[in-house]
Image (cartoon, rainbow, N blue to C red; front, side, top):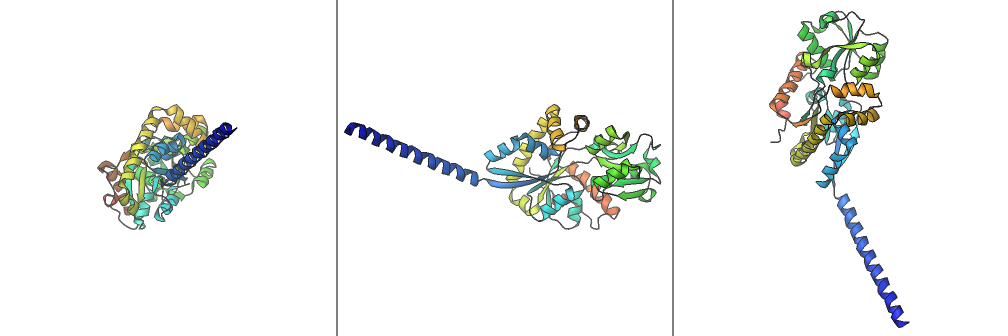
Length: 323
């Protein structure tokens, strides 16, 4: 009996020791998770970070480097710039126009990276039976756009290339939903926009791109920007973001079928529409260079000369090239 009791005592002691070890491990594991530094990235549905979020590899790689990524979705670039200005996001993937408007209004932001373009899927749409066959035919017509977005720049560039002035058309400033209704009811003659909306309208409303960004120079490139103070203090983090983001974009460019499947779910659009948009787009996340800065400076100059922004913006003063 004594021998049996001794065995039970030893077994109980082992159980206690194992439990203590497990408890210590779990506490350490929790501490490790809680010690991860949080980084918040703003994005819009269908953009580069939407793909990275859905794929999941980006967050895993960042976690191994000590960062917990939080993705925050926004409906438009203006809202994202407001969140950036108040410190509610650390990085924002946004189109080419909102950062220029934000800088002109005094927001302190830094360009961290450039993305791909939607040049083949961005431009001015018209109905095929409209009788409008060139930008020159837009003279006297009503053109829908959304103020402060890339669509405004698209129209300006198209008019200039065709030798028309800003007074040669009637500008109709509408948000996306209102513009969609106005276009479908033929209350406007043309509509400036980008994929996937352009692809959807082309396939469902007997429409065509009258002119695209490749033809006008309004390429609709995306950028990643950050609050200037944050960018200055987190250059190593920014380099990781570019490194792993670029890996995801290389994957996206070579796995269209998987990207289409992801975006059909996220965008709640038909496979046919998403396929058209994806197949004419190049995904990318790259370090900033002088060519990207020049593109953005041309946009800023155009907006200033057209009195859309009241302050001249020098893009190069707000760029981290992250060599």
